[in-house]
Amino acid sequence: MIFLYDFKSDDGTLTAATSIPGFGVDNLTDTRLSRTYRSVGTDTNIVIDFGSAVVFDCIAFSHNLSATATVTLEWHDSDAWGAPTGSLALTHTEDIIFQTFTAVTYRYARLVIDDPANTFGQVELGRLVVGSCFNAPRVANDLQLPRFTTTDRGFSRSRQAYFNEGVRYRGINLQFNYVTEAEYNLFNAMYEVSDVKPIFLLFDELSNEAPMYAVVDESFDHSLVGAYGYYTLNMEITEVF
Image 1 (cartoon, rainbow, N blue to C red):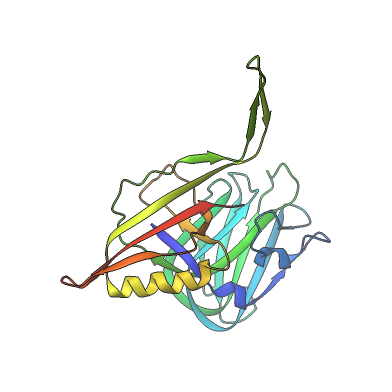
Image 2: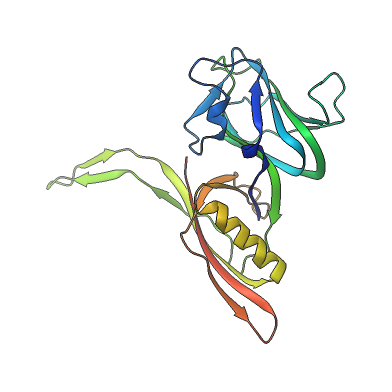
């Protein structure tokens, strides 16, 4: 399982090639996925100026892109993109793209999108983050993601059913039985972030599960197994939008 909570792009400056009024790049740093950026047309690019060279090895964002969209992350030491130092073609996954790569250190990154098959006619993105990932230790329990719903259901006396449809979401209680001190410190660093904003998760153990944008429970339950020098830790995560 991979956690993304070190949001380097949140401290940077984002600039888009085009945007629809009311749907500018400021929405990409809003913690609500429902607040979105929209481009003029089906192609765009978004430049991130981190302010100084930073280390980053992952990117995540929600989107409305078609499966045939061309999506590329580039990086460079200046805001001139004729020949960027490096680039990576991102793999399409529905709703949220979350991709890791070998760490690089640069001041600028650029997300380039070309999606002529987009049926909406505009590129729509939410909560774009570039940063450093944390590879968590193996979970102790079998990793399954149950589904929940906010739908209200009612029944008449004659057993007719009435529904007020909500949304479906995922959630899980995670248990880690062997956490090193270094991993424990990373979890604590994540707690500082997840206490005030949602984070991204990638379930690399489950190929059929999409990445998740989620809140973490208000507390981490952890214990030090003193005789062996490692920790146990429990946490609950719940999907948000």
